[in-house]
Image (cartoon, rainbow, N blue to C red; front, side, top):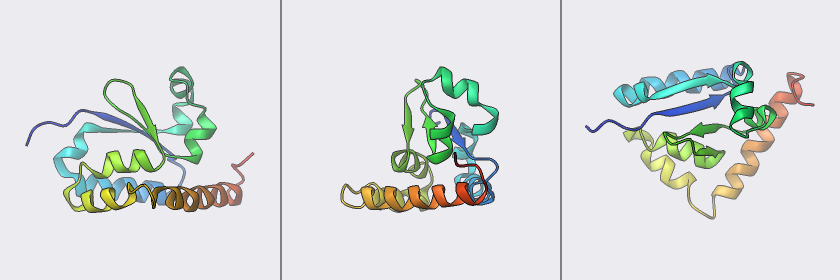
Length: 123
C-alpha cells in the first residue's frame, strides 16, 4: 500500500463523542491512521488563526488540513478522512452526494450547536 499524504485534523477534544469517533477511526484506519495528526481545537487556537480559521468555527465544524496546507471543513473534511479507511469508503461516497450533503450539513450543524450550547461553550 502506498503511503498516504499526512493530514491534520482539528477536532473538539473536549467532546466525548468526538473523542470516541477519533478512537474508532484510529482503530479502523490501521496503518493509514498513522498519517493523521489529531489536534485539539482548544490547544491549537493560535495555529488555526495563522491559517485563517476562526477557532470558534473550528469548534462548530470539523477542519482537516491537507499536506500542502489546504483546509477542508464540514462534510468535505469527513469525506477526506473516510476515504482513507476501506470500510468507510462507501459512507464517504454517500455523504458526499450533492443532494445529500446540504441536508447532512444542516443536521450536523444543529447537533454541534445544541451540544455546545448545553455545555455552555456556545457564545
